[in-house]
Length: 299
Image (cartoon, one colour):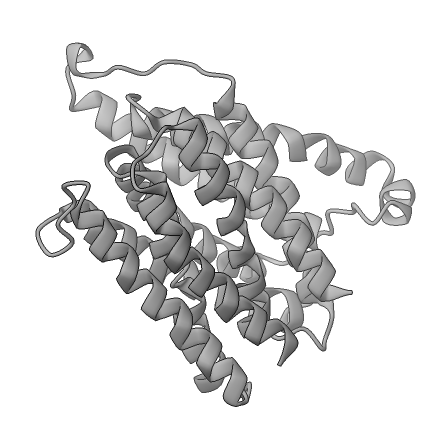
């Protein structure tokens, strides 16, 4: 069941990435990021209020936000700091790079998760899983060659380094999620609500500092329907992802790879909607990524 939940998370993540590209295109990145996180928080707020006033009902719906000690709040704050940094870097990169370049680089996230799962959680991959992960990395390298034809030189483009750093931080957060869900036994609504709350505060502070030090003539924030859509879709994706992690048999290395099937939506549909170049050539490394995911799933 956790694999099917992972596929549901991938579906919402793919739609989330499309809306995110629309939201940040020619827009003020930090304002967009704060808007998306705030929208996600507003979706979760009724669940938190319901947990205070009607706990039995929320428990029956599996949407209970449980009381947690201060120490656990500290652990969740660490996750918020990791992901706030990752999102700031990723949003900046997405604004300056094609979605068909950004998304495949993000697909290297399972490789970092893969290494962490071996070193930290002692998950043991088999031969097919090794092949699958290296296929994903090779495919990302092929994307870099295609990116050069779009004027994106990977070695000298700072936004490439930004998206790589964001990918590493995101993978670190994925490994940390297993600790929060399985070791601290946090249920998805509890983790989602407090994570979103602390992240909103952190990003709000970043936005406040940036707006204070930037003249109004240099700020070009435009409200779009896709901004709240990003936050709402992310909450659905996180819910199914955290539910999958609750299964003690779930392997974080495989779940991370399953989520990469969002590439199918982001590259194929995104390439058409945003009219990006070299869509057919990108199908070759895309096939490599999907084959790598297939080997991991069915090994």
